[in-house]
Length: 328
Image (tube, rainbow, N blue to C red; front, top):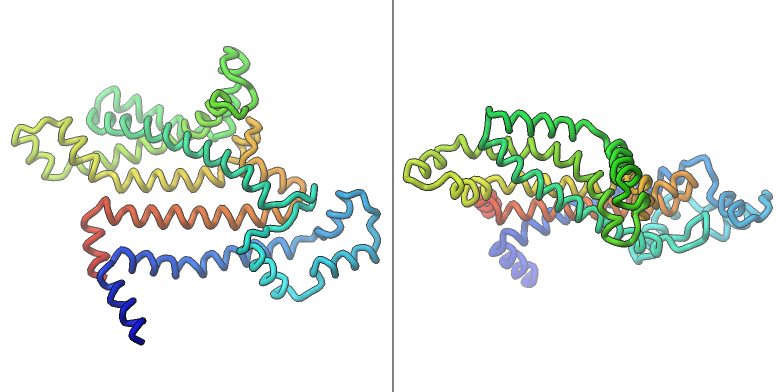
């Protein structure tokens, strides 16, 4: 009890740590539910993984061989026993082997994840570099020609799907102008077109969000008061308005990262960028269940961690949120 009281006193002095632990404990059931669904849906699939494995290896499929392989793999046990065994191995890093080529699923994910992270990072950086200044510009020039032009272009970019943007970029820069390679390579040059294909639609969407956030701040009384005291609008924009709009911008960035990690499959497939999206699409076509299960669980963990970090960043960006959490 004394140790428990010491821990409680320590947590009471650190509201951010208390909030973080509370969120982590709340996220554990979510992650367990994701693993249960990922394994359960694959378990209910009509295709038998043992038969698929034997067919991939060129072994004649017979009922005797299938039963022996199912017993050896433990697939004849109750569902809950299989799930708990799979979960325990997954937590320790053993994600199973591919049903297609027998390779380690963890090794395949380790090769694909850095490529998806690189594509995600470049796309987010380009999106922020374009949408933040353009969103501020449309807010400052509200009602002018440049405002209507940028809003029209943002609406047009937001309405274009990623795969269509990819094909248009390939036709223009790779086929017509021959400035960039058709297929993505391991070099920075091969990353340009996939990055543009992901950044252009996101930029169109986030320009409008940044514009709305900046307009909301420009309507506050502190902006009028600062300008009436002789402070230049540019100083107010970058010192006060942009800082107060950072919560919206950080939220947009976290949403971008989460959607890009799991939603860039079409772009990766078009440019043959062998990241996580390319890997899981190939696994879906071949019904490689262990790869699909590992992808779903890993993406869920990454998405939950990103949301947690984003929520914690609000603690430092907005004093009102910080005071609310210190009280709770």
